[in-house]
Each structure stands twice: as structure tokens, then as C-alpha cells.
Amino acid sequence: MDVGLFTANNVWMMICTALVFFMHLGFSLLEIGLTRQKNTINILFKNVFIICIGLLLYYIGGFNLMYPGDFNGYLGFAGFGLEAPILPDGSLDLTYSEGYTYWTDFLFQAMFAATAATIVSGAVAERIKLGGFMIFTIVYVGLVYPIVGSWQWGGGFLSTLGGEDGGFHDFAGSTLVHSVGGWAALIAIYILGPRIGKFNEDGTPNAIPGHNIPLAAAGVLILWLGWFGFNGGSVLSADPAGTSIVLVTTCLAAAAGGIGSFILSTVLYKNYDLTMMLNGILGGLVGITAGADLMSPFESILIGLIAGAVIVLGVALVDKLKLDDPVGAVAVHLICGIWGTLAVGIFGVKAGVTQFLYQLTGVAAAGVFCCVTAFIILFAIKKTSGIRVSKEEELEGLDLHEHGMDAYADFRMNQH
Picture 1: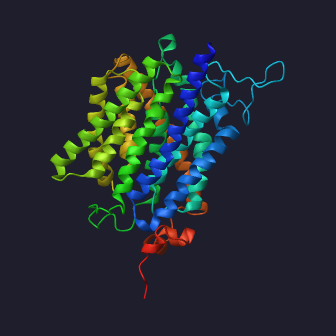
Picture 2: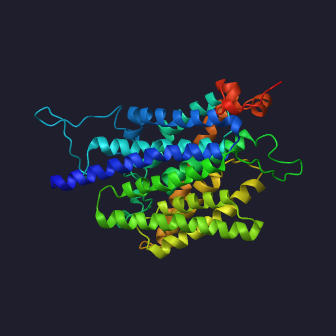
């Protein structure tokens, strides 16, 4: 490969790596903005822990679980740590078959790995024991996420469903990243139960307003920016045509998602709900992630509009089921992740019944595996160390009880 092209590819991939890393700030701001002041430190701690432990776990074994080389298509492991490519003269081989270095490949993929646990963090906010959440994160990010990823991106059975014609298609992870986190979030909020005061005795939901909507809005805009790296980097090169169309479809779907949720929520609830519009933007982004490389601009707008509507209906469905999801993670990442994955079989250059069935197979395989593993992990934690904080801790706030500090110390009420 031409040295200039190789360098351009590698630099682009590193920029995208930085953008995906920046998304963790977006997730943090969104979560603390949509929850109560008394739990801010707890949420920030979880998000910082996730990125730290996620990188280390991906180094220890996750990378080689996800990209095991030749394997049976279901489970493989290429060994612990990173195997530094060495040339015959003893020097490090900085080239890589994909057109960027081995090190860049590891770091880019590692940034994706922690995202799955971040999705769960928002759903379980304000009532999960920190220790239990950390144990769950270690097992889920260390084992479950890379195994599911290997089924497609590592050359596993989903990637070969159709033989030479190709099989399941998930460009940047509507299922392999977002639904993997979304399924775990669904199981977690079922096991945890709702926050105190979320539902009345007759089952009707109460709104528990977030304490800082400006931070939530900033978080969503940061996530939108980060998606330039999330989807743009998934081209796996700096190819001008490939990256350009992916960024166009990504942005159009995000914009359409915001408008779709705004219109439907306004029609249904007769008010201009900013938080619903913000989640609609995220829904559009998650929805286009599976097929960003296959869609025309118009098709990406349709996918985003539908995702925006799905957000409004999804949030209502979660409430109807008496499940408590403080940030709307299940609607955004799970339901829109499923929609985006199935949309590859409805829109774009691969659309057709056969492709739709491939997509459905991928959704089902990931769903069953993630639900079963998440349930086992969380149920085991519940039965051993316990998973939910006490009533007193929940009412007074996790910051005080689990961290002994306050996010906004200058604003603390004078208790006299």
C-alpha cells in the first residue's frame, strides 16, 4: 500500500478513535442531566470506571475474543494480551492488512467495547449498588460483548449466513453494540425494579424530572459529534466516497429522528418535549448505524423519522410495562437498534426478504444470548452481594452514601 494512503487511513482512524472516546463525556452528561442531583457523583463514577476497566479488559482478552482468527464461528480465543507484530529483523511491524496499524485497530475497537456497559449505566441509574454494577460491567464487557461481536465482525457465523453472497449486515453496531447494551439494560431494570415514587399504586407512571436539562442537551450534541467517529471510522479507511456518504446518512438520520420524535410527541402529549426530541436524535443515530453505508440520503431520512416515532412509542411501552428507565436507554439503544438492523432488509442496496431474514436472525441470536447471560450475571449478583441499595440510601442519594461527597457542594441546603 502507498505510504501516503496508509498514513491518511491511520490518521483518520485515530481521529475517529478520539471521537468515540469523546462520546463517553456525552453519555455522562446525558445521564446526569436526566437524573437527580443527589446521584450525580455516582453516575460520573460509573462512567469513568467503565472506560478505564473497559480498555484494560479489552487488552487482557476482549480483543482476541472478538477477533480470534480462524475459529468455529461461535467462540474462539487468540490468547491474552496484545501480540506485537514482529518483523524478521526484530523490529515492530507497524503495517496491518486493513491499511492501518495493529495498534490503531485495537484502540478503535476498544472504544466501542465500553459503550455497551455505558448504555446499561443510564437505565439502572439511581438505585443500583455500585459494587454490583462494577462486577456486572467486568463480566459483560469482558466476555459477552466480544463474543457477540465475533459472530459478525470477527468472521463468525452471522457473517457467513448467505455464503459468498454475504449474510447479516451491521455496519457499525445497531445490534452488535447498541442492542447488546440494550438487552442487558432491559434485564437489569426488570430485576432491579422501579425507583421509589416512579409508579402509583394503580400503575400509572410519575415523571421524575432530571436536574439539569442543559447538560443533557450538551450530552446529546456531543454524542452526535462522536457518531462521526463511530460510523465514519467503521468505514475502516479514509476512503473519500465511503466516509462522505456515511457521514451524510448518519447526520440526516439524526436530524430526522429529532423531528420525528418532536412531531409525534407533540401530537400525543400536546407539549414541546425537549427530552423526547433529544432521545429522538439518538434514536435516529442508533437506527442508521447498521446500514449507514448502504442507504441513500432519502432512505436515511425515512429510517430516522421512523426511529424518532419509535422512541416516543418505546418510552410509553416501557412505562406501560411498569419498567423504570430514567434516560430512555431501552427505547433508544434496544428498540431503535432492532429497528435499524431490520431496516437493512427494507431499505438500501441489500433490501429484500432474504436479507431481512438474515437481519432478523442476527437480532434474535444476539437477543437470546445477551438476555440469558445478563440475567445469569445479575441474578447471581442479586443473590450474593445484593444489587439494589436500601430505601434510605435511595431517598437520600447515592452520592452521600456510596461516595461521601456532593457534586454541587456549594448548593447544598443548610440543614438547621
